[in-house]
Length: 200
Length: 200
Image (cartoon, rainbow over the protein chains, first blue to last red):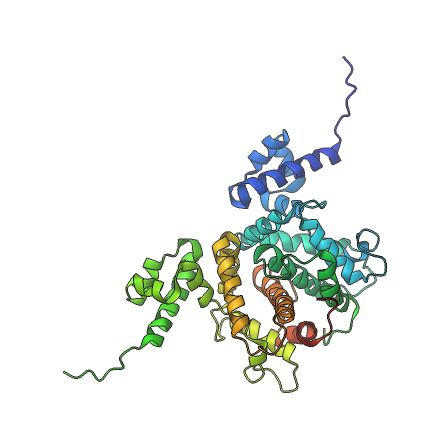
C-alpha cells in the first residue's frame, strides 16, 4: 500500500506539538501540565518535544504570542491605514491574545501571567526568548543596547495593557475596542521606539 | 494600677493587622495565608480582621502599595525638583515596591502578581479598591469617566513597569535607577494624565 497522505515534515510536527501544548496549558495551567501529557495529546514521543523545545518552560514561552516585532507589524495589523507603527503594535498585541483572533485567547494571557509569576524558570525562558528575538531582529546596524532599552519599554506598556485588560479587567480598558486602546497607547509605543529618550 | 502605656486605638489595631498580614503574605503567599493565621500573628481575634477588612482578598489589596494618587505625589516623591508629575508618579510607584523603601519590597510585587492572577476574588478586590479611591479622589469637578480612563492608562504603564522590572526582570528596566526609568516613562504618565487623548 502506497501512502497518499501528506507525510508530516518537521515544521508540521513542531506545529502539532505547539497546538497540543496550547490546549494542555489552557486546560491544566502551567504547573499541572507535563511534557509527557503534551506529547500524548500531540501523538508524538516525549523525546521529540524535548528535541524541539528543550523543556516545558521554553515550550510554554513558544506557545505564547509575544509582542510581534514592531518592524514586521506594518502590513499585518488590521487597523486603518494611516495608523502609526505604535498603534499597530498595540492593536496587534491585543488581537493576539483575544478570542477569535489568531492568538490563544485572553484566557492564555492569564495563564501566561500565572506561569511567569509562579515560576522563575518561565520568567527566565521569557527573557531568553526575548533576547534571542532581539539578536534575530533586523537591527544589526543599530545600537543593540539602545534597541534593548526601547524594546523593554515597549514591553512594559504592552504587558501592562494586557494585565489591565485581561487580568485586572479595569474599565474602560477591559471593554474598550482595540482600535480605541491603540489610539490612546500607540503614541507611547511610538515614542519608546522612535522618540528621544534621556540618557541611555 | 493605672495603665500608663498607650492604649491602642482602632488605627493602631488596624495597622498591626496590616503589618502581620504583610509578613504572612510574604512568607506563605496569598493562597496559603489564612485570616486566622494573620490574626494569630497580630494577636487579635479573627473577627476583628473581618471587621476591619471584610475578607482575605480585601485585606491583601489593602496591604499592597497601590499607585499613589497622582495629585498627591507632588511633595512626596524623592526625585529632583523640576521633575514632572509623571516622573514623580513613576519614581514613587517603583520606590513603594522596592526593598529599603517605605513599601513592602519587590518580593511583594511578585506576590501581588501571583495573587491577582491566581484569584479572581483578588482581582475583583483590586478593582473595587481602585474604584473607591477614584470616588474619594479630589476630582469631584472633573468628568469621572474621563478620569477613570486616564487612571486606567496610568495603571497599565505602572503595572507594566513593575512586571518588567520585578517579575520578568528584563534589562535594562530590571537594574536601571528609578530616576532613569522615571525619565523614560514619566512623559507617558504625563500624557495619560494631562495630555489630549482621542475619543473618550
